[in-house]
Amino acid sequence: MSIMSDSGVPIENIADLCGHSSTAVTEEVYRHQLKPVITKGAEAINAVFGEKKTEPVTKRNTQKSASVA
Image (cartoon, rainbow, N blue to C red; front, side, top):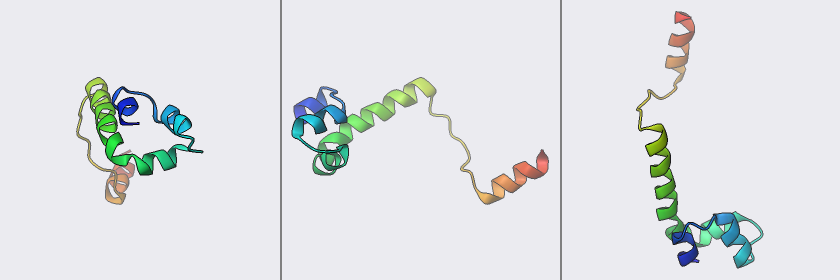
Protein backbone atom coordinates (compact mmCIF):
# COMPACT_ATOMS: atom_id res chain seq x y z
CA MET A 1 0.00 0.00 0.00
CA SER A 2 2.65 2.53 0.98
CA ILE A 3 4.69 1.82 -2.16
CA MET A 4 1.64 2.43 -4.33
CA SER A 5 0.77 5.59 -2.42
CA ASP A 6 4.33 6.90 -2.62
CA SER A 7 4.33 6.17 -6.34
CA GLY A 8 1.27 8.35 -6.89
CA VAL A 9 -1.33 5.62 -7.43
CA PRO A 10 -4.78 7.22 -6.89
CA ILE A 11 -6.55 6.35 -3.64
CA GLU A 12 -9.47 4.90 -5.60
CA ASN A 13 -7.18 2.34 -7.24
CA ILE A 14 -5.54 1.44 -3.93
CA ALA A 15 -8.95 0.98 -2.27
CA ASP A 16 -10.06 -1.28 -5.11
CA LEU A 17 -6.89 -3.37 -4.93
CA CYS A 18 -7.27 -3.72 -1.15
CA GLY A 19 -10.87 -4.87 -1.55
CA HIS A 20 -12.33 -1.85 0.23
CA SER A 21 -15.84 -0.89 -0.85
CA SER A 22 -14.97 2.81 -0.72
CA THR A 23 -11.97 5.04 -0.21
CA ALA A 24 -13.17 5.91 3.32
CA VAL A 25 -11.78 2.67 4.78
CA THR A 26 -8.52 3.05 2.90
CA GLU A 27 -8.14 6.64 4.04
CA GLU A 28 -8.84 5.72 7.68
CA VAL A 29 -6.51 2.72 7.79
CA TYR A 30 -3.67 4.25 5.80
CA ARG A 31 -4.06 7.91 6.78
CA HIS A 32 -0.48 8.18 8.05
CA GLN A 33 0.82 6.95 4.70
CA LEU A 34 -1.47 9.16 2.63
CA LYS A 35 -0.52 12.45 4.30
CA PRO A 36 2.66 12.91 2.21
CA VAL A 37 0.68 12.29 -0.99
CA ILE A 38 -1.98 14.81 0.02
CA THR A 39 0.73 17.31 0.97
CA LYS A 40 2.43 16.90 -2.42
CA GLY A 41 -0.92 17.45 -4.15
CA ALA A 42 -1.57 20.61 -2.16
CA GLU A 43 1.91 21.91 -2.95
CA ALA A 44 1.33 21.26 -6.65
CA ILE A 45 -1.96 23.18 -6.54
CA ASN A 46 -0.26 26.07 -4.74
CA ALA A 47 2.46 26.12 -7.39
CA VAL A 48 -0.15 26.37 -10.15
CA PHE A 49 -2.53 28.84 -8.52
CA GLY A 50 -0.13 30.64 -6.19
CA GLU A 51 -0.39 31.14 -2.48
CA LYS A 52 -2.48 34.32 -2.56
CA LYS A 53 -3.73 35.16 0.91
CA THR A 54 -7.37 36.19 1.03
CA GLU A 55 -9.49 37.57 3.83
CA PRO A 56 -11.79 34.86 5.24
CA VAL A 57 -15.47 35.32 4.45
CA THR A 58 -17.39 36.36 7.52
CA LYS A 59 -20.80 37.83 8.13
CA ARG A 60 -19.19 41.24 8.68
CA ASN A 61 -17.29 41.03 5.35
CA THR A 62 -20.44 40.00 3.50
CA GLN A 63 -22.44 42.90 4.94
CA LYS A 64 -19.64 45.35 4.16
CA SER A 65 -19.48 44.12 0.52
CA ALA A 66 -23.24 44.34 0.14
CA SER A 67 -23.35 47.93 1.38
CA VAL A 68 -20.57 48.99 -1.01
CA ALA A 69 -22.27 47.49 -4.08
